[in-house]
Amino acid sequence: MASRPRTPAPAPPTRPETHARLATHAPRTWQRMLSGRRLNLLDPSPMDIEIGDIALGLSRNTRWNGQTEGDHAWSVAQHSVVVVEVVRRLLAPRRDSELEMAALLHDASEYVTHDLITPLKAVVGDVFKEVEDRLMVAVHLRFGLPPRLDVERKALVKRADLIVGATEAVQLAGFRAGEVKTLLGIKEKPWPDLTLTPLPSREAERRFLETFEAIGARLALERR
Image (cartoon, rainbow, N blue to C red; front, top):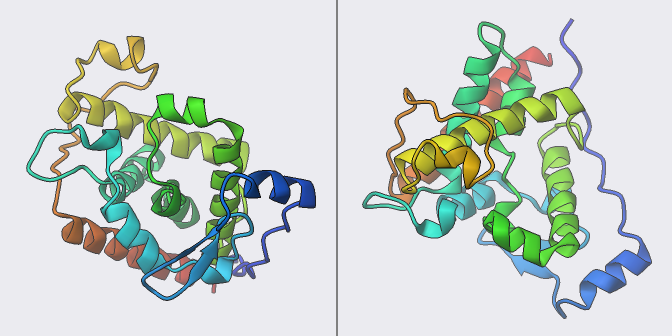
């Protein structure tokens, strides 16, 4: 029997001391989206998250700080769609629509935080990680996913993410295959049969939304 859809629950409130500490970094902790939503970064509500805002933000958000080959930037939106493709191939012939949705949304917080490169994340530290984690919990709840994936499923999405990252490094970011592990610390190898072609942001946004709708429709059928 298909599982029942999960009822989104509100994200747990930020502890007062955590809220106060994070608030010292910025006097205004919300952002207005083009949808009209106001998303509070410290206490993000799932109801203030819209897939259109995510798709728009990720399609204009570049991987590798924009330092990639091609006439257009390689966006987080395109990256996310390819991660779904890799997850499907890793699971084949089995399908897991919930995991595919989590894979598509694995970088969704970056529509607010942007894609900080790994060295900068290390400099920014724990404040960024806390904000990112709370945003991801809210995103998952908004779209009917568990607040956090279990260890095994999280590891599979991460593996797909690293495979795509390794492939991007070689095809788009100017690294040699041997440098993927030695310089970038990525243990997964590039997949040569993944062809990455940067698209205009509007097309990347469209493909992201199409992927979301297709996975969402399949997930709804499975949960009936």
